[in-house]
Each structure stands twice: as C-alpha cells, then as structure tokens.
Image (tube, rainbow, N blue to C red):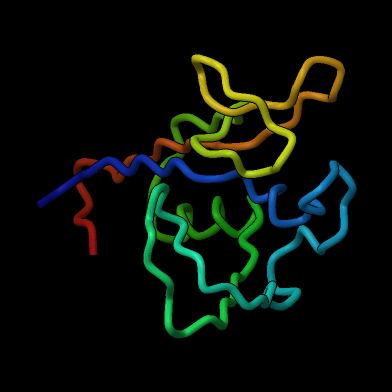
Length: 128
C-alpha cells in the first residue's frame, strides 16, 4: 500500500541517562555506548503479582539523532517532533501525578520525560 503514517510515542531518551534517584546524569546519553544491564524479577506491568524467571535485563540507548536518522533513512518525512514534561508512568521516584501524567514536582526543573514523532511516507512510495 503506498504512503503511510508512523506515530512513535515513548519515554524520552534522557531518562536512560539520569540516575534513578535524582536529576543527575549518571549514564551515557548517546547511542552506541553500550547497554544498561541490571537484574530484576519485577514486571513493568502495574499490579502484576508474578515474578519473571529470567532476571537479566539489557537496555540499549537510542538518542534522537539515531531515531530521526532511522526514519529519514527509511524514506519518511518527519512532520512533528514533540517533547513533553509528562510521563505515562512513575519513571522516577520523585515524580508527582497530575491530570496530564507524571511530572517533576514544583520547584524542580521541568525536563522532557516523553516524546512523540509523526512521520509520513510519501504517497508514491511503498512501506517495506
């Protein structure tokens, strides 16, 4: 089918660089600098009582340059890129819940916690 639209909405890449207890940068931000490795038997699904048998976790960083370059290399045109000071979940222990989502409390800097990109494939090109 010719054309197509992609909506990508996710945690902001900055979150992987922050220390969990503060707004201090403790990890690399840029892509290609290795993985963040940790052990956990917890599920990210809220309210889940089950434990995960395989506890090794490996998360790879994807900065905005890598994300945007991948979309452009696939022939998509970026229509919108938005950063938001709200997260869908309590990504850091000090975030407070509001009607718009989780955010930093009053008196702390507002930082991007999530992002959204809308990209479109031209009508005369096929996806895939």
